[in-house]
Length: 258
Image (tube, rainbow, N blue to C red; front, side):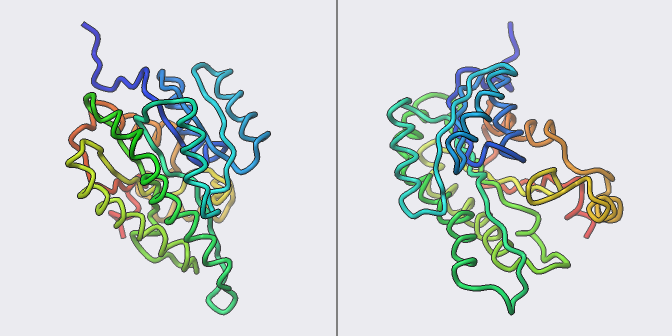
């Protein structure tokens, strides 16, 4: 008898911001394990190219272009998905924006863009996706929403990232409030708070980041694709079916060692 504890084959997944960084890692992990995976990006050609590359490595992947900082983007994205699918087993709210301006330089438009992408969009994506998630909840272990938070939402770093940190702390709280509301419907909601992973926001090859990792991360290395893939596959499979309302620090021990 096959061991299906970590099986996600045949599931339908949507990963926002899936063209690069952690989102791309997650999408690759899902597709390689048999989940039909949709990714989003702001540019259609780039999104299609990323999806084609993921398909080339094995598995199903398709691109949907959307700018999630726009107010109507969640509704448009889910409408496009509903033209293709009747259920959604895995929703990964990964698309994010950052701004490192000091307090004196931050303006309202920049603040609003970060909060719109990192907080508003995930909430309204869940809202718009509820019919698809509820359809998936008819089967066990049911669907899961995975929100990408950050260790920047669990502590205050040594640099200024006011909007980013506030948005990530808020997404951790939103994860708990959505879990309380949606658990009764069989829809699980969890968050991951990554530490340093290679991405457009974090150059893990730079001397400064390498020094920071060596100093503050007990495991002494940045995250790798398999690290985030493993947690997401766990949460999406029967193995993670009793994990609900949690924020998992995926940081090599950074937060624990503070």
